[in-house]
Length: 483
Ligand code: GLU
Image (tube, rainbow, N blue to C red):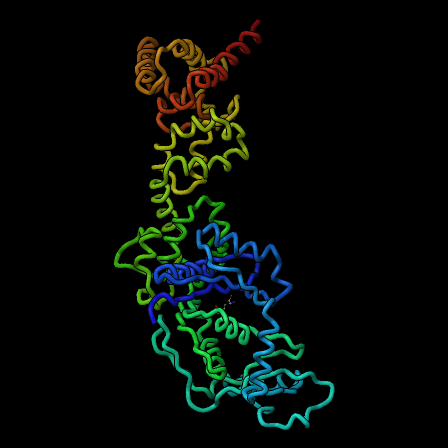
């Protein structure tokens, strides 16, 4: 068979979020399909009606869309395929590969206790395997169980774990249809993987034991099982299994933190997959290189600091226009000016500098927010200290500076620098004595991008207005108070 036939799938149970582990599973399936020119399907295992709300489903589709992992064809909803699952179970029953089991809950509980005491993994003792249904007690709705092979073993050539096998005696006869007639996960997955023509099932290694049971079922149905690839679970940077304690586990939270989808893809890719010592691997490169032989068998470690440093890389590599589009709505929530032509002009002027320093879009937006503040600016305590008291010397000097700047012929960094230097000389003070209060007046903070770049970005009118807002008004108020 050529590579053309590869069909992978991501089969999440909608629980209200797309978590990191699920996102990584989706990415690996997507990359495998793209690498082999195959298709990547999305199947929602939504048989738990209570949890599978429209919001829970949207959390998955939105998360995949944000990550740029588009799926092929229609979304398959497992809940809509119930009749087919039931029909397959009935077929197995008719063929003698499944049977009705009339055990009471008490009997099952006792079997479970026995198995626990004996340290057996097989819980159900098979008591209805050969028993005549005529002996069925009344008032018990039977479940339908798979007549699993008891002799020999089931082997899988896992594409990540290598050859793995289990003695068939370790697996009991699993339920295919519950007493209320609903199909179980184990049955549904097998039927859906078969009907969808799935060739490769790449998923977390917590499903490895399921793979043995599913393989048995495939064989009983005379169907070809898919290739399985069970990838190690994700741990936090401290080596413990990933949990809320390690920070955000839902993919949506990374969008809010200002992580770019391409950085997230790169970070997820590196969770268990490697290509030499390469850390920065963009998506085209990943598609070209991805294969399952390079998936490690040890638990992968998720490291937020690594993600941020990758994100810094992708921010620097992004076009200014793309960054503007990403931060404008974030800024506009608090500062409507960001969504105007003037606001955008200011932001774009400082973006090339700011993007070399930000590790997230939130940091980038924070760095540029002062450009779109409304006057009068709120002053951080340190900035207020730089300005000194109202009517004080620093503010009076700023008022004179505004007067000197207003008539400048050119308003660019170079012209501004020589004008401010000349002004400092006339005033007989060092440049710092001017620049520090000026920075406070223009940004509300004691640190900012280069002061001349800030002035150039704000433009003449806004620069003079911000300076006057702290200088003249303060002086006037003092004059008023004295008068
Ligand atoms: N629905 C299962 C889960 O979310 C995955 C089933 C599978 O990949 O076979 O864990």
